[in-house]
Length: 236
Image 1 (cartoon, rainbow, N blue to C red):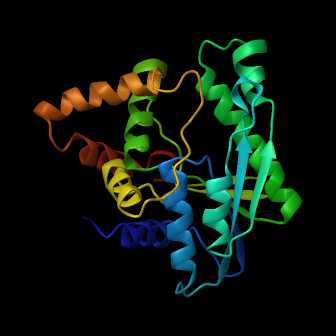
Image 2: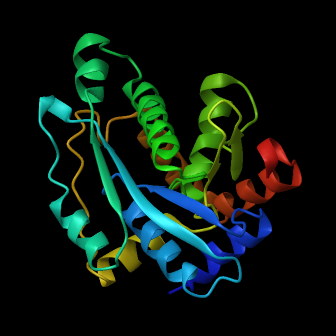
């Protein structure tokens, strides 16, 4: 198994994601990626040359109008002495009942990020870490190409001037399968998503197409990320 924490550290160093005195919020959905991100940042904070603190934030969409049970995540944070803040929202109702969005994931993600940004400002946190990994980057690239007819991806580091907050993505060099293996091995308390669109999204379709392409081009993901970097797309 790869040294995932070393991979996270490499991304942090390459893109100067962390500075002295940073108060970093980790957006925690309860999924494997955000839990691994939280755990790795906690670990890195113990020896990183620049001192920073970590706080976990969750914007609960309350799918079906019901709050999600994050008690296992609360205990996960408690045993690591990390503050954990949950904001209950009406995102699930707005996206799936009122708006009845054709592409619910995009609106849901934007609304959750907006709530997390506001929580960061309220709590005096200057950076928000998100759990997007290498596979997410590759999928986003192809989604932009196939559906939008453009070349692009999310950025490793984004500054939101209106909120005075940096968004960072320390997992961008980590492969999803390695995160999955690590989370399973360490028995992290993954909270199953209650999203009605889970597994039937445009992103899932792109993921399946990439898996098909890998049969003929086994290193397509690594080559795609390399092309994004060489093209310096979106700050890569």
